Image (tube, rainbow, N blue to C red):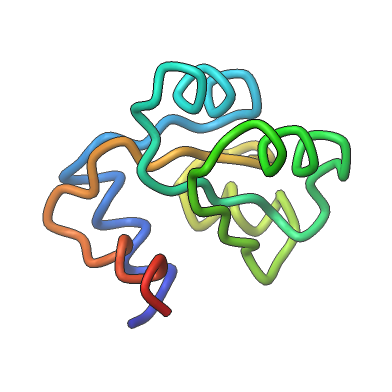
Length: 96
């Protein structure tokens, strides 16, 4: 699976919420199926979501700038939540 193309497909055909605040809300509402954090995401945020939820957290092998570009955004994205994968196979990361 190519992570970047799977993420783009999930964004295009499913529901993906980006940003730490939106990601945390999705976790609290139990709508997040997968959480992706950038390599340079603040440790406090990663620790807080790992401790308080049972959602799978995938660490993207790149900075928040690269994750933002992968998402097609002109700004940094340090965290995102996949609520609905749509036609993407991104949820297969949970099985890897």
